[in-house]
Length: 268
Image (cartoon, rainbow, N blue to C red; front, side, top):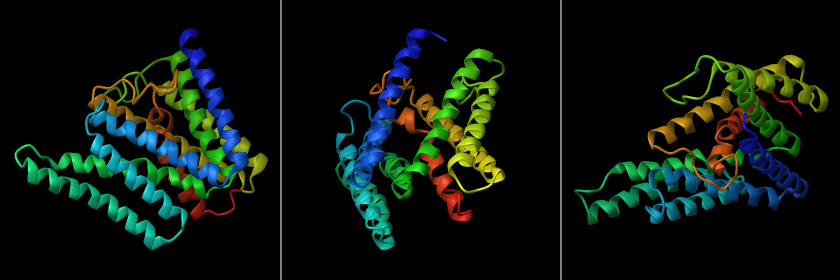
């Protein structure tokens, strides 16, 4: 483990924790604004994997606009508004395809429309689950994803060994995956028994589900970057890459926890 790469990683992590503390303390509009800002930045990075630099700036603006509409619709907690926003996202891509096909039919592909819509569904839709969680739950989910990543980082670097999924992520090992998973389960158990209301079995199950979700989310983004020949989604966070690199596991972990809470109420 090189200190030169670890120092900026830890420094960036400390800044993010401080910002999170402020957002959770203020709550309300601060949480909504922070979730929206992170969603927009991560979504633009996702689009950048397909349209790097200034390419596709029109599609990026359309996606950002639809994301804002979706956030505002979810904030109203009106199912019809949310469904309307999701349909709007789909048809924004379709209308873009229609216009491009009219102008350049021989060069137009529906692929661009699909990417535009998938960016809205992949990032903003998933992160909005956090808005409806209590601060203790947000910390729980963020902690689960963070310790999964940290445990895998150190266990994989210290132990090495066989690769878990070399075609998707050549550097990740079974030791890292199991180390990150074990740390996540233990942290979730301790955090849950300390601040929660559920039993030990529920917290163990939640920790297992969250670490699997976090690792699958990470693998998915790794596959995207490998497919698009990109090392990182961006460089906004020193030591971590881009915003999307930091929240990739959270994008699946947040809805998984929301589903667990809907099935088994009384975690917190």
